[in-house]
Length: 319
Image 1 (cartoon, helix red, strand yellow):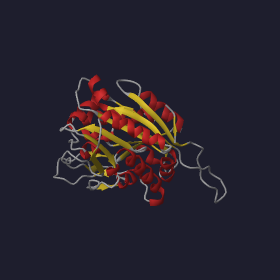
Image 2: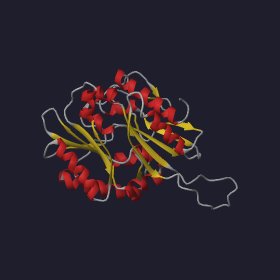
Image 3: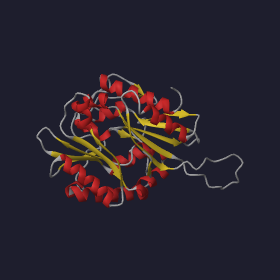
Image 4: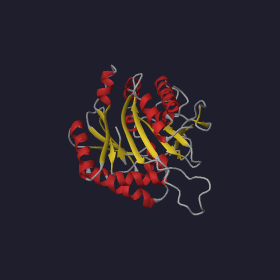
């Protein structure tokens, strides 16, 4: 992975609510009870949140990894006029492990590198939250354990350096998680580079901020008609762009602090199985459900609409 600047649906089967069409028309169910999100691990940690966030960064880099972004959700929320307790997400990990996942399925760039969230809970305790390997593998569409094992080992080393007890902690069950409809996609007629540039442009206007652009697999071409049988196909390109919209994210973080694990917005530009340029992005409503926020909450609707607009701009369908 080169710094230039998990694929699944949460079809959550709690008590039924009104149908909301999204993705390929699947019905969204009621939000889970707020608390520990499905597929995540949360443990108490020593020290204040700022110190733990720094230790995470040090653990990532000391193991040869790269810190892709550090997002201080609390500081961004304050600038938007919303006060929340300390809440920071550190996104990073080893290039080789992340690239291996993206080579297996280029959509993996929509959820990697791994996020590690540090926050202060209602009791004033510093807590560390992260996604389990099973959850990340499902998000990434990676079914081969040999491919995901390097990421498992790298994340275990990072966690062992900052909170040893977290390595063996039990993850919340993957309630209702299936690899369908989580990643929304828009098809572009342009190149990978053009779509990335358009995403960056959309992410730098109207209250948005581009945090990072991450190239997992470079665009080295696509299969061409007339090639001899057996000619190896070039690896499918995958580049992610991380974009934040603090004014809309802040009230969501106030309502459910754990949602900081799934923010900022992630967009992945990749070559799909039909050799088309695609822009993928998680369905914000399904992320909200994971954290106990109703999908029809006005703030969820607003952030989902902005994500749609950014993705369509990236695909060249909107100016």
